[in-house]
Image (cartoon, rainbow, N blue to C red):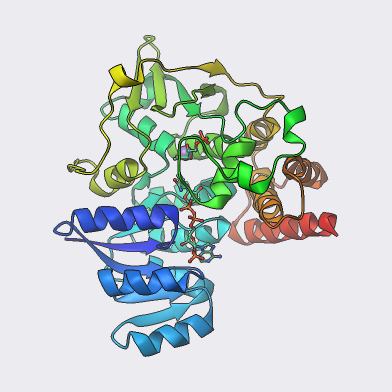
Length: 381
Ligand SMILES: NC(=O)C1=CN([C@@H]2O[C@H](COP(=O)(O)OP(=O)(O)OC[C@H]3O[C@@H](n4cnc5c(N)ncnc54)[C@H](OP(=O)(O)O)[C@@H]3O)[C@@H](O)[C@H]2O)C=CC1
Ligand SMILES: CC(=O)[C@@H](O)[C@H](O)COP(=O)(O)O
Ligand SMILES: [Mn+2]
């Protein structure tokens, strides 16, 4: 039996992870979990999966749940995220929380020797060097959950890093893939939340529409696969059937394909290096699909992708600024405070205003993260 700590259990990745745990109840058990403010769903999960430790965002929610579930240990806030991440019985952490709040619990889980299944890409963007250095030091695997990175990871099985020519990340184009920049002036939040292929949480769906999701994924790939930015390409592929590819020096390209279903990469991370059946998955039928489409990426149309490449290559504290500005700007867009195109404006202003500092440690990363959010909020007044 593998015991799991799950951060972000009430979210899109969190609930799909629970689906996998349920499908393979003889293999996996939920030992600890965290939720934010969705207490209605948290109640149902606790009743069904019976975790030993539960952390919630707010103390008041914790106090109420304690009365309802006297046999469960409860905790709350950012300390609760860490407690759940390092829960003694768990050997695996699935980090499916949203945002850079996932960084510190991940570092602590690495120090506690847990295998890390990482969906929370913001953690790798904001401080990839800290995460990967800690993983090397404590000899723990960092297994990708993000579909593109899982595809690359699968394509690299049995291959030597030295033989890689480049990584090719596929991008759907998001909710506005067929709109010109002009047409983006007046798009609404609900239009932006309508992803053509994937059903995901609100923040990543907006990231996908701005193409920042792919930008974050470029930085995520850089850290996970220890590959220079010059060897990472992005290819528009509107069907999201090819989840990503690796080209090798001999011109061979290995791709991973499948219907868009996040349970597949989640399960692969949990079972790696083995595989288990997934009885409810939609099988890929290429004859039925008939055609797949590909296009060059337009970096003028999708400015956020260029920002991410530039920030990633520059390194230092710039990726932290990129991520924090994006988190704050997307939140403002979702709350109706700014327009869609203002997201990239706020990110650009934050990057321009920042003097990058090399090789930041954790406290500097946290400081820059907070300062950047404050800077974005000041521009909203
Ligand atoms: N969804 C997807 O298909 C994919 C997601 N990812 C990545 O996975 C991560 C999770 O995404 P997704 O599942 O879509 O996100 P969701 O918004 O659906 O879920 C986020 C989860 O995190 C919790 N949460 C949010 N903020 C906090 C906080 N400050 N403290 C504690 N808990 C918090 C939420 O709690 P509550 O709802 O209870 O408030 C919820 O459980 C992101 O980094 C995303 O980029 C990567 C690939 C695909
Ligand atoms: C499912 C997943 O991994 C998302 O990150 C997805 O890739 C979003 O798709 P696009 O960013 O390509 O629109
Ligand atoms: Mn992805």
